[in-house]
Image 1: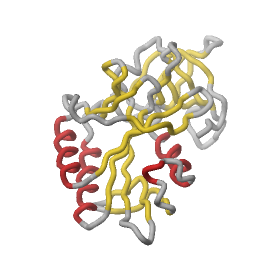
Image 2: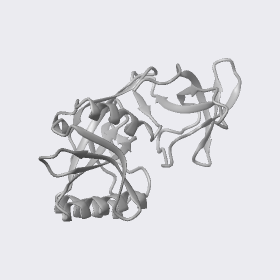
Image 3: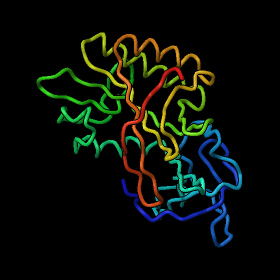
Image 4: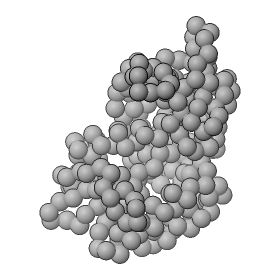
Length: 236
């Protein structure tokens, strides 16, 4: 997924009200950017961090910049926009580039199901059970090489696990797909200490037959692309 306009570097001043961030551009001017991330962004929103912003001149948008990346200044990046996984995965699924899911030729995003929910992707084939795929963006890392989900309590995420479990009960397949928007992670797990309720719901979902997959991302200030599978380890 290429960024619509070239990103520009900046220094983070502060993130506040969850969806706003003040930053200083290279010319010294200070701007406010939209932060498309409802999570805690633990370890990713410290003042002074180098970040990358996407400018826009869309009159429908209140802010002229969107915060897209954290630059760890060691060759690694983290993508902070939680809308990216679905956009990046859509093309990847349509092109059947994920080997484990390539047997499904039909991909439908945002399909209503369950109790007032929408599944991120419904994969279908006339000869196979429907596959419901829920996607989560993973950005937390508190230990070198280890990515964790979630970074804050997520009642919505817990609900999604229950919805996937109900699809299993109806004879379908269901999958929890964690897209790791960090280039410095090689393993994925749950942050059970942050949200033990989510962890319990995850265990129940997996026990019922819900599948789990983790994928890496290749990230640069030019694009974010879906990468190779990563090992998911519930217990380290």
